[in-house]
Length: 146
Image (cartoon, rainbow, N blue to C red):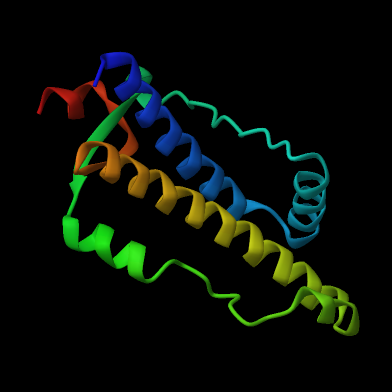
Protein backbone atom coordinates (compact mmCIF):
# COMPACT_ATOMS: atom_id res chain seq x y z
CA UNK A 1 0.00 0.00 0.00
CA UNK A 2 1.41 3.36 -0.99
CA UNK A 3 1.78 6.27 1.38
CA UNK A 4 -0.87 8.16 -0.60
CA UNK A 5 -3.43 5.36 -0.17
CA UNK A 6 -2.63 5.14 3.54
CA UNK A 7 -3.13 8.91 3.93
CA UNK A 8 -6.44 8.70 2.05
CA UNK A 9 -7.73 5.95 4.38
CA UNK A 10 -6.62 7.92 7.41
CA UNK A 11 -8.30 11.12 6.25
CA UNK A 12 -11.52 9.22 5.43
CA UNK A 13 -11.78 7.74 8.93
CA UNK A 14 -10.98 11.09 10.56
CA UNK A 15 -13.59 12.84 8.37
CA UNK A 16 -16.25 10.34 9.41
CA UNK A 17 -15.36 10.80 13.08
CA UNK A 18 -15.48 14.62 12.77
CA UNK A 19 -18.89 14.39 11.11
CA UNK A 20 -20.08 12.11 13.90
CA UNK A 21 -18.92 14.60 16.51
CA UNK A 22 -20.66 17.43 14.69
CA UNK A 23 -23.87 15.37 14.45
CA UNK A 24 -23.97 14.97 18.18
CA UNK A 25 -23.65 18.75 18.68
CA UNK A 26 -26.47 19.85 16.35
CA UNK A 27 -30.00 20.65 17.47
CA UNK A 28 -32.82 18.36 16.44
CA UNK A 29 -34.25 20.93 14.00
CA UNK A 30 -30.86 21.41 12.35
CA UNK A 31 -30.40 17.68 12.07
CA UNK A 32 -33.77 17.08 10.46
CA UNK A 33 -33.08 19.78 7.88
CA UNK A 34 -29.57 18.49 7.14
CA UNK A 35 -30.83 14.93 6.81
CA UNK A 36 -33.52 16.04 4.36
CA UNK A 37 -31.00 18.03 2.32
CA UNK A 38 -28.51 15.17 2.36
CA UNK A 39 -31.15 12.69 1.30
CA UNK A 40 -32.42 14.93 -1.50
CA UNK A 41 -29.10 16.16 -2.87
CA UNK A 42 -26.64 13.46 -1.73
CA UNK A 43 -24.28 16.21 -0.58
CA UNK A 44 -22.73 16.66 2.83
CA UNK A 45 -20.16 19.23 3.88
CA UNK A 46 -17.92 18.20 6.74
CA UNK A 47 -17.47 20.84 9.39
CA UNK A 48 -13.92 21.76 10.24
CA UNK A 49 -13.20 22.38 13.86
CA UNK A 50 -11.34 25.57 14.63
CA UNK A 51 -8.08 25.19 16.50
CA UNK A 52 -8.16 27.47 19.54
CA UNK A 53 -4.92 28.91 20.92
CA UNK A 54 -4.00 27.66 24.38
CA UNK A 55 -3.67 29.91 27.40
CA UNK A 56 -0.18 31.12 28.28
CA UNK A 57 0.95 31.28 24.64
CA UNK A 58 1.53 27.54 24.58
CA UNK A 59 1.22 26.30 21.06
CA UNK A 60 -1.32 23.58 20.48
CA UNK A 61 -1.33 21.29 17.53
CA UNK A 62 -3.31 18.30 16.40
CA UNK A 63 -1.60 14.92 16.47
CA UNK A 64 -3.05 11.78 14.94
CA UNK A 65 -2.88 8.66 17.09
CA UNK A 66 -3.16 5.29 15.37
CA UNK A 67 -4.39 2.07 17.00
CA UNK A 68 -5.04 -1.34 15.53
CA UNK A 69 -8.58 -2.71 15.59
CA UNK A 70 -8.65 -6.33 16.68
CA UNK A 71 -9.88 -9.08 14.39
CA UNK A 72 -12.55 -9.92 16.99
CA UNK A 73 -13.85 -6.36 16.91
CA UNK A 74 -14.07 -6.39 13.11
CA UNK A 75 -15.84 -9.76 13.14
CA UNK A 76 -18.30 -8.39 15.71
CA UNK A 77 -18.97 -5.33 13.52
CA UNK A 78 -19.57 -7.57 10.50
CA UNK A 79 -21.93 -9.91 12.34
CA UNK A 80 -23.74 -7.18 14.34
CA UNK A 81 -23.94 -3.94 12.34
CA UNK A 82 -25.07 -0.89 14.31
CA UNK A 83 -28.80 -0.41 13.72
CA UNK A 84 -30.80 0.99 16.65
CA UNK A 85 -33.69 1.87 14.32
CA UNK A 86 -34.23 -1.69 13.12
CA UNK A 87 -37.92 -2.39 12.60
CA UNK A 88 -39.03 1.25 12.75
CA UNK A 89 -40.90 2.18 9.58
CA UNK A 90 -40.46 5.73 8.28
CA UNK A 91 -43.98 5.64 6.84
CA UNK A 92 -45.32 5.89 10.40
CA UNK A 93 -43.46 9.12 11.16
CA UNK A 94 -46.35 11.30 10.02
CA UNK A 95 -48.50 9.96 12.85
CA UNK A 96 -46.01 11.06 15.54
CA UNK A 97 -45.26 14.47 17.06
CA UNK A 98 -42.76 16.90 15.54
CA UNK A 99 -40.36 16.33 18.46
CA UNK A 100 -40.35 12.59 17.89
CA UNK A 101 -39.79 13.04 14.17
CA UNK A 102 -36.86 15.36 14.88
CA UNK A 103 -35.38 12.86 17.34
CA UNK A 104 -35.78 10.14 14.73
CA UNK A 105 -33.93 12.19 12.08
CA UNK A 106 -31.10 12.94 14.50
CA UNK A 107 -30.74 9.28 15.44
CA UNK A 108 -30.92 8.27 11.77
CA UNK A 109 -28.09 10.65 10.88
CA UNK A 110 -25.96 9.35 13.76
CA UNK A 111 -26.71 5.76 12.74
CA UNK A 112 -25.74 6.49 9.12
CA UNK A 113 -22.47 8.01 10.34
CA UNK A 114 -21.63 5.02 12.56
CA UNK A 115 -22.42 2.62 9.71
CA UNK A 116 -20.18 4.59 7.34
CA UNK A 117 -17.37 4.40 9.91
CA UNK A 118 -17.89 0.65 10.33
CA UNK A 119 -17.88 0.13 6.54
CA UNK A 120 -14.59 2.04 6.30
CA UNK A 121 -13.01 -0.22 8.93
CA UNK A 122 -14.36 -3.37 7.25
CA UNK A 123 -13.11 -2.22 3.85
CA UNK A 124 -9.68 -1.55 5.31
CA UNK A 125 -9.70 -4.97 7.01
CA UNK A 126 -10.58 -6.80 3.78
CA UNK A 127 -7.92 -4.87 1.88
CA UNK A 128 -5.03 -5.26 4.34
CA UNK A 129 -6.18 -8.08 6.66
CA UNK A 130 -6.09 -5.61 9.56
CA UNK A 131 -7.71 -2.27 10.32
CA UNK A 132 -6.34 0.91 11.83
CA UNK A 133 -8.33 3.40 13.84
CA UNK A 134 -7.23 7.03 13.94
CA UNK A 135 -7.92 9.66 16.56
CA UNK A 136 -7.12 13.35 16.38
CA UNK A 137 -5.95 14.85 19.66
CA UNK A 138 -4.62 18.27 20.59
CA UNK A 139 -1.35 18.54 22.46
CA UNK A 140 0.65 21.48 23.75
CA UNK A 141 4.38 21.82 23.28
CA UNK A 142 4.91 20.55 26.86
CA UNK A 143 2.79 17.42 26.32
CA UNK A 144 4.50 16.58 23.05
CA UNK A 145 7.95 16.52 24.69
CA UNK A 146 6.85 13.77 27.10
